[in-house]
Amino acid sequence: MSMVKTEGVCKTFHGGNGRKPLDVLKNVSLTVEQKEVVCIIGPSGAGKSTYLRTLNRLESIDEGQIYIEDKLLFDCHNAVNSVKMHNDERNKILLEVGMVFQRFNLFPHKTALENVMLAPLNVRKLPFNEAQEKSVSILERVGLGDKINTFPAQLSGGQQQRVAIARALAMEPRIMLFDEPTSSLDPELVGEVLAVMKQLAKAGMTMLVVSHEMGFAREVANRVVFMYEGKILEIGTPGQIFSNPENDRTRQFLNSVL
Ligand code: ADP
Ligand code: MG
Image (cartoon, rainbow, N blue to C red):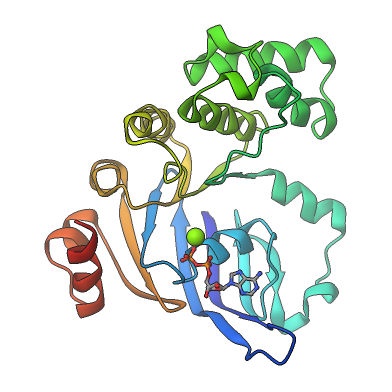
């Protein structure tokens, strides 16, 4: 069973106000196996965020199919809304997919613990004590056991991002998507977030990570995907992509960031 499978995914943004439509994803096919860590790299505007967002239905698609754990999430040949799946069923699939963004989006008036407890309480409908116990242990896992009652404003960016990771983990996702999780952090705070991600990968989480942390990709990724102008131009092991890229665009991109 593959964890994520996309076949021929296309997406066009229609600008409105007479702006030209923009093809953002052009025939993107990718399969991610269980426990695999796949890093997506590529220049700004390549479609990396849009692609991740289609995987938990934050974006619709115009063409292609998306499967999560072999279950069809999206099929354009049947038109989005006529897929024979109840919303309940689709929402259940989406619970399997956790996402962490560049911006943490924590609730400022809630403590770290309260932020993490929201989903277990409201979505998973766990009893209060169980949700609390579970959330505390997840915060401990990301190294924030001593910050459970702290409000986001009193936490560093790295700590806030770790709360955001804890919040996603509290849903018990089977797949985690990360969209440039460290790119808004001060350089000295990047390491603590990557360390948590590394630990997750080691524990067997299936992960799709958009990041330009090449050290992380080299060390943790099973495969690296290079996206350019809405297409996957190259997929390979970190060794292949970083040391011996086949595509000129990949080479140019790596030269510009390394
Ligand atoms: P990346 O994450 O690789 O930088 P994105 O997926 O964010 O790329 O964006 C790909 C392209 O789609 C960019 O040109 C961006 O401006 C455009 N885009 C992203 N979101 C929207 C939107 N909601 N409406 C219109 N255009 C968008
Ligand atoms: Mg992006």
